[in-house]
Length: 451
Image (cartoon, rainbow, N blue to C red; front, side, top):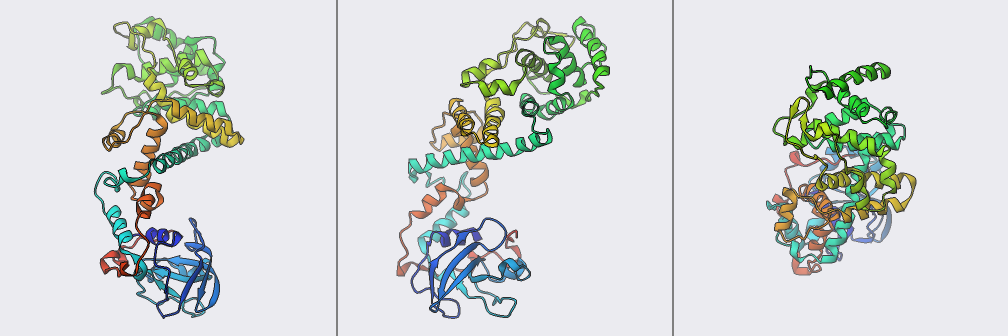
């Protein structure tokens, strides 16, 4: 049993409201349950409760056991001085205010409906891939789809938190921040961090001073990546070495260690050397990347911006000094779409949020609807449950649902879980549930609420 179940039934009044009494026999009437508080302090604020005919205004605190009041140190917190009712599943200790006055206590176990309690326990103790796996098909389609829409926005909000922090560190420079963030995305999972280190060691302003020379941009990037430290036999890397030595002195650069880069167990097309060459060509062709993304009107224009054709040397090489069969080595659409999902759309969403311009936030959402859904094992499981996934807006929302709600058993915070629980009939007299002690975790194991 979790305390959030008490919050759920109290907020929605999903318990028998007639003949409510405190543990000392005082008659209770709920005039207003209060506002659910998600921050420090009592669980519900500004409630109005009539006890034995006297109207009280104040706050409501909830625990599985009343003794958790002391376990959470509420007696030392002045925020709890105005608690007018303590709602619990077991009053194992009498709780008093600092002045010695007993706090009225409602033992809710006697007023809970059997069906609701059983359904909640079924979700909470489910060992299936998602708690509501057997009931998912019963949820109305409109409820499911509206919840996915909300989860997509929630996922974008979470993604933009890290981007906003980076933007602050860069003094509000959008181009520099986007350049660094996109570099991280360019590196795939394996080389994402080294790619970010590379971008942080070499400002886009420095690179754009050489925007008319692809060899100079490559020299700066490969040199800073620590990949020009060997004795080469090919002329091209030797030319890059010579160019980098001059630029290194000019800009007082300190290169990374080449040991950061990972080549093992990777397809040659994903080698960091190929990705850096693509990155250099993209910067050479596009320049200020973020400005171009902002003016792009649709996904097609963004895809076109990432079409890069590597120089002759890289068409016949995956690494310096190692010739290979000629190939174009362009960025595939799937890779571009991942950049849109993970970097570009969240960045445009953040831009709209920071500027107070809804048009950009709406554009970010439309982008997610235009990009096909990605593929991974989580989405494969959703499909196995019969969920139709076509767009990235759906796939990203489903990833958020699985990772942030299903895995954490946050059914009471989920519109799907609430829809399932709300289907139970109203409480009838014969449905009164006297909860057994096994509903309650041992006091020593009870999870403390953060204050």
